[in-house]
Length: 126
Image 1 (tube, rainbow, N blue to C red):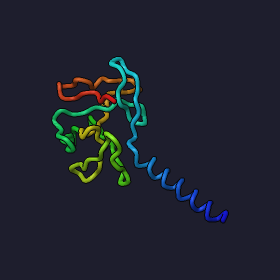
Image 2 (cartoon, rainbow, N blue to C red):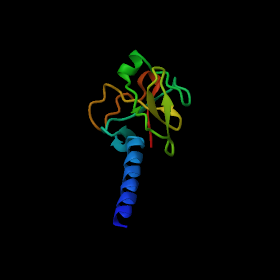
Image 3 (spheres, helix red, strand yellow):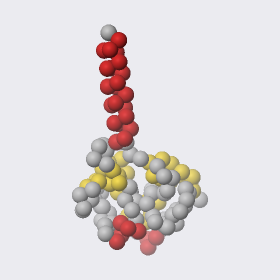
Image 4 (cartoon, rainbow, N blue to C red):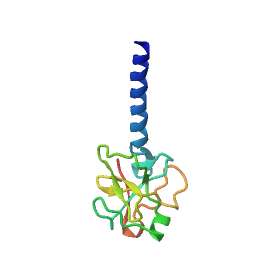
């Protein structure tokens, strides 16, 4: 009986760990413009007005300046967060269907230097 309980507990823990790994790696941080979404690293996230719902149009040189918030193969949609397929076959997190990106010129938690850049980048709000 003890071994059965152990196996059940192990299965539950394993499922919880897998779910945690697949959850969107975002949090909320305070900035000069209020609370914004950030990656686990604390860096602000942005959306690109030239993207379409569920489609990333920031590739190649664009993605070098605006690195996507990548999703691994185990990533599953959760609430407002979904996973989009990128042109190169990788996966990216999106909020409300809009792919999420970092900005290479942000250097610390709370930076939002990309907000409004060329009128096509907007800081992502929770």
